[in-house]
Length: 163
Image (tube, rainbow, N blue to C red; front, side):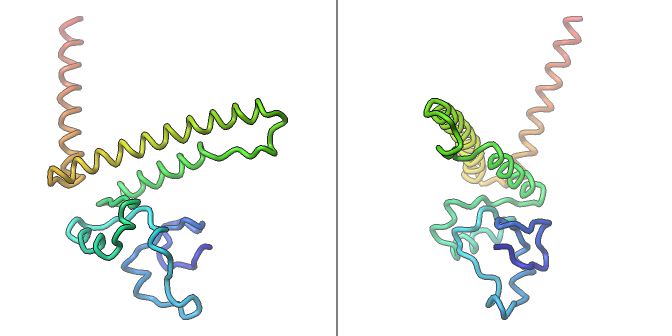
């Protein structure tokens, strides 16, 4: 269910987001405050120096949580998850006239699920590698941008040479 949040991040669906520091300051007696299971948390946007303490509080639930450093990263992750949900569904047998049609739909959705899984797994591996290096996500993105800029320059030099 959607809660009437003070800072709802423009979401009022079951998977709504909120600004932790604002919502926890205001208790709603009717709902006994903002209460939800830790397993419901998918993304946390926080400064790097606060992440360790949050991880300690959440315990084993952090395995399924993506930590991001900026609202831009938050939006990228939430948009990716929304798009993934739109391309993925579990076909219901009743919606198909024959077993063959149902089988084709299941095969197609299994492929979609595998693709999304692989994308998320790759994203997680990238973030894990950044954290192992002791870098922040912003530093890693800047390094990636520099590498891309260098490649663009090399491509341009070769194209100019070939003219």
